[in-house]
Length: 203
Ligand SMILES: *[C@@H]1O[C@H](CO)[C@@H](O)[C@H](O)[C@H]1NC(C)=O
Ligand SMILES: *[C@@H]1O[C@H](CO)[C@@H](O)[C@H](O)[C@H]1NC(C)=O
Ligand SMILES: *[C@@H]1O[C@H](CO)[C@@H](O)[C@H](O)[C@H]1NC(C)=O
Ligand SMILES: *[C@@H]1O[C@H](CO)[C@@H](O)[C@H](O)[C@H]1NC(C)=O
Ligand SMILES: *[C@@H]1O[C@H](CO)[C@@H](O)[C@H](O)[C@H]1NC(C)=O
View 1 (cartoon, helix red, strand yellow):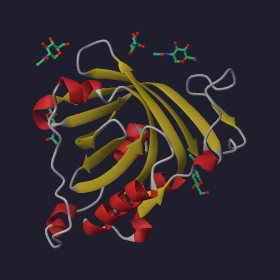
View 2 (cartoon, rainbow, N blue to C red; view 1 turned 135 degrees about the vertical axis):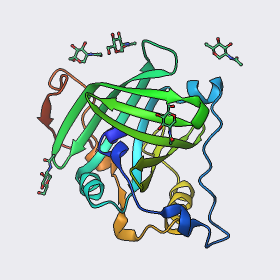
View 3 (cartoon, helix red, strand yellow; view 1 turned 90 degrees about the horizontal axis):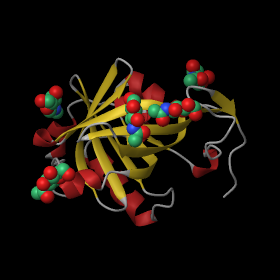
């Protein structure tokens, strides 16, 4: 999605877990239990809301990512999803429909495959509304929050931001998307791999 979602999936940070034990309010980043209900529950449309990283290359990507939505479809095999991603990078909307997500149930890992580029994340939490990933790259860890719609509640946002701070992310390492930067619904002018500039949707 952004990298997972694309750039997003490639996020990362360093040694967050070590610091995580400092605060009693810090919910541990425990991988989700992966049963059929969990895996099937990932299908469908998601809006990438925000993420955090302390790894400069990924911070740069997240800074460019103004808005992103993605849809998971059943893929060719069990525990494989086809993914369609629509992102605004800087001013430009980009559509990708060639990436896949492979689910490894035994270790709660999702691997996003876009061409030869692989990015890995652990599923920390998913329910009917929210989808939280811990992105892993070398020794870096990142966290991201997606939701079924861009209208997450203030409480949901505050809870996730509190978690990010609790796990050692500073404000400048946290990147939030905005619905004002949404891309127009996928249409004629935005085919595979193509780009189109478009005015942000109102509302
Ligand atoms: C999970 O789904 C698979 C494939 O759809 C099915 O074969 C299996 O029986 C299901 N497992 C459970 C515990 O329902
Ligand atoms: C998923 O992608 C593969 C190509 O990688 C394609 O053959 C298949 O039809 C796609 N499945 C769906 C449901 O779109
Ligand atoms: C986005 O803008 C930044 C700063 O202007 C630039 O360095 C970067 O290459 C741009 N990225 C894309 C994907 O256009
Ligand atoms: C989970 O398992 C897969 C396949 O065995 C492996 O490629 C991946 O690195 C594992 N994930 C983590 C976080 O260790
Ligand atoms: C990706 O989009 C292109 C252009 O809209 C379409 O021709 C192609 O079939 C799509 N591929 C998949 C795997 O959905």
